[in-house]
Length: 295
Image (cartoon, rainbow, N blue to C red):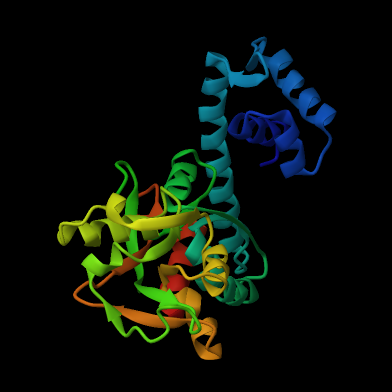
């Protein structure tokens, strides 16, 4: 976006913090205040107000945010379309991905994509599926990759690839010789699971519900916000965990973890793209097609 003031305003409006906006834009906090003040002077309207220590958008601020985000979307589309005229794809692509996808699937894919299209500037936001969908709805990203079962109204979903959740334990633990467990027995096993809002937890909950088991019946000793944290916890405890098969490839090869079968319980899910438009275009479409063909 050519008008840097609008970029500063959008960042400040999304974070509701001049400090965090300055950190994200790599400028000083006084510079953020200056750019916002210039916009307020230009339109003769107050864009932010303070309630105690909290920063809030005024009605005028919300109006400007909606318009500025539309301008930013149009500018990215313009940049992409003009790059096609030169025969060289370039522009900015803001991706968001749920934790498992961001950690285990996207890095090698992004390495190949940026090698193929070196003029494309790619950024990646990572969070749970709900946070990624929210970021898309807030125009903070252009395309998301999530693992959730539910679908948010107003967004569109395109299949990417299948995944399986597996039950894992450490080889030297009390379940080292266990080959399989039933869903009912799973309720008695100490488990470490992902946090509320994660796609992984949503899949587990839905599968257990089909067997008449509530998530609250599980013996959850800890909830963690990352799969890496869960794996490290399991390697040093007697608890088991249910994680993506993609996330434990290295541990299974090295023998650090082993899979225990879930008897009569299949935990399958799809990783999906989530996008704001039914038929995405520009860099969003280009990355979506590249990722699906890269398989």
